[in-house]
Image 1 (cartoon, one colour):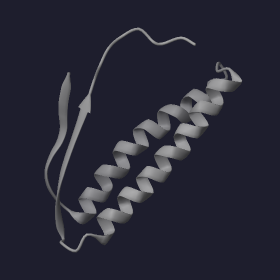
Image 2 (tube, helix red, strand yellow):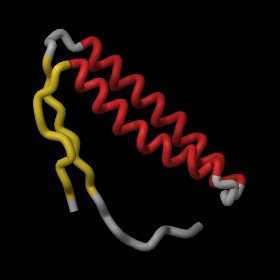
Image 3 (cartoon, rainbow, N blue to C red):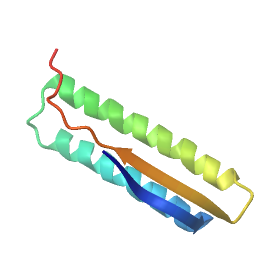
Length: 89
């Protein structure tokens, strides 16, 4: 199932805020997992690694937005949702 979550034109400042907020939700999810104290060491490390990846990707995206010459830009964000049993190793 594919869902469109953002599809429009936004001033650069609003675009930055939207992107930051989207990433903040996922980062907060991993931070809450880490604080729950119910994770294995491997799960904790995966969440910490994922937070770093998200922060790096956010910074790259913000740099692109800031470098964009126009004052308004188009953002289209889609999410593909597949529901299935987790893969166990």
